[in-house]
Length: 276
Image 1: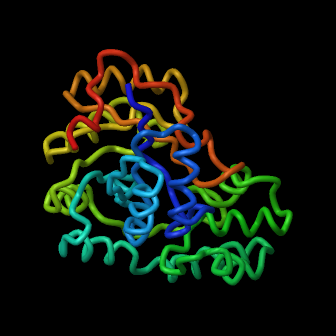
Image 2 (image 1 turned 120 degrees about the vertical axis):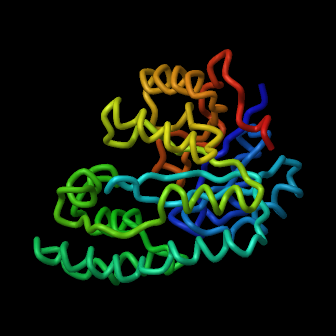
C-alpha cells in the first residue's frame, strides 16, 4: 500500500512550514502521495504542487472546510477538486470572512481573565491574517508562558466552555459538500474521533453526510486512538465509505505525528485515493 498522507497544513492557514517545505519534508519521510489541506484556503496549492514535481511526489489538491452541524464545529476534507472552480473559491471566501472579527472577540474574552495583547500576538504569528485561528492564539500564549504547550492552551482557554472560546458561524454540511462535489472533488469527514458527539449523534451525522453524497471518512488520523481506528473502520464498512489516512501535521514538535508516519489503513477498507 502506498504511503499516502492526505491531511496536513502550511503557513497558508495554521501550519508552521511553507507549502514547499511541507512537501519536501513529506518526500524525505517517504510519502508517496500528499494532499495539502489548509483550513478554508487553497492559496498554497500551486506552490506545493510545484515542489512536488521537483521531488517526484504525487500531489493531490486538498482543503479542510470548517462547518457547523447542530452547533458543533466539524471539518470536512475535500480532495482532487478543480482549484479554479468559481463556486468553491467563492464559498471558501465566505468561510474566511469574519475570522479577524472572531479573533478580536477571542482577545476580548481573554482580556477578561487578565490576558491582554493576545490579538496583536496572534496576528503577528499568522502568515495569512485572513486565516488567523485558535492555533495562532495558542502559540502566542505558549510564547508568553501562559501555558507550557499548545495542547494545554486549548484545554484551558480555547475550547467550548473555556474563557477564550467564542462561537462563529461556519458553512453548513450541505454547503461544503456542494462546493467540493461541484468542483469534481471527493468529500471526506476529517478526524471524526475528535468531535464531542455521542455514538447516536455520530451515526445521525454520518447518515446525513452519506445522504448528501459524502464519500469517505478519515479512519487513520494523527489524533485517533486504536479504539477510534476500530470504530471508524466499522462505520466506514457499514456506510460504504472509503477510508482516508492523514497525519494532520501542522509543524515539527507541534503535531500528533510527523508526515507519513502513520500506520497503514486496516485491511479490508477501500482507500480514498482509489477515488481520485
